[in-house]
Amino acid sequence: MKMVKIGDRVKFLNSTGGGRVTGFVSPKVVNVEDEQGFEVPVLVTELVVDMQFDPTEPAPRRATPQKIKKEEPKPKKESMPLFASSAGKPATDTPSYFLAFVPEVPTMPLSGQIRIWLVNDSQHTVLYHFSVLKDGDYSSEKSGRLAPYSRVPLKGFGHNDLSSFPDFGIQILPFAARSSALLPALEKTIRVNPVKFYKETIYSGNPYFETRAWLIGLKEKDLTPELEKLKNHDFSAPLIMEESGDVKKPEPKRKETIELKEVDLHIHELVDTAAGLEPKDLLEVQMNRFRFEMETAIQNGTKRIVFIHGVGQGTLKNELRRELSNRYKKYDFQDASFREYGYGATMVILKR
Image (tube, rainbow, N blue to C red; front, side, top):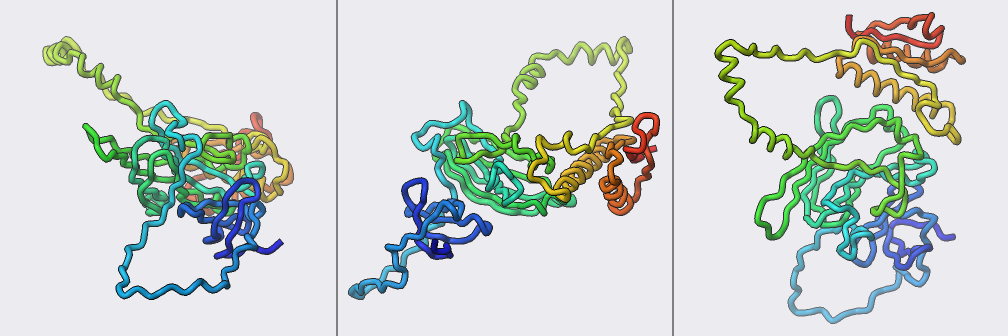
């Protein structure tokens, strides 16, 4: 079988059509540009080089026109129509937007790349801006225009990126060519637990991709019912009674802090199956969960957190304590209660 390279004309093995190879997404996946200008990521094993097309064949000569009209280059089409909506039938009852995580190999998600897509399942054209939040700063990754009922790739990542996985920011501004009112914009920051990428069951069939994917809905909370209640509420009576001294102004509630949080790092608690994962992969899953729980506990004001790592050969315990001594060295840690956990747990003191 001839090796596929950039510029080759190729045909799809399992469907009609084909196009030209424009680049490599990974060693196993290439981008193919079809006759309409759409770029599609396709596995190399699903392609065959079109031997009837010879790129070295000289093109026929044409008569040189007296005046050459310079044409403006056409913008490259990134979005691809969704097959479920190609006939004007949306996949959801209401306009929806999704951030989709699509693995190259759904049965072994982290054996290849996982690509992030933005899905626009609505009748509106949208302007989008995708960014990465790391160390308190948003870094712009991609922006553009997305047609109705279409999708666009945003970013790819692999197994090595999970140890310092960032949050994602997404801004969406929908609009119509003609409308009686302006459509509301959407702005969200998405935090994803990287441990979930190891779970095969997190990916499911969907109307937007030919393979299984993990979809996260992007939707602002509807505050209309609460606003209606506020409109109908009579604020005057309590205010008058408060001013007269009959009713005391309630003291603001203090934010409750969690005294103790317990996290079980045994691998069967974190993944559906450990089949196909090497020891180093299992350790990485456990450490990703450890980092996620530590950051969450710090933000929530948790006072103490106990990590149950078991005894075993001590690999997880040693790795956990090494990271506590370096990355989280401002916090004290010690063996957790022997009566409750034996020798298999470490307690981190976040607040005294």
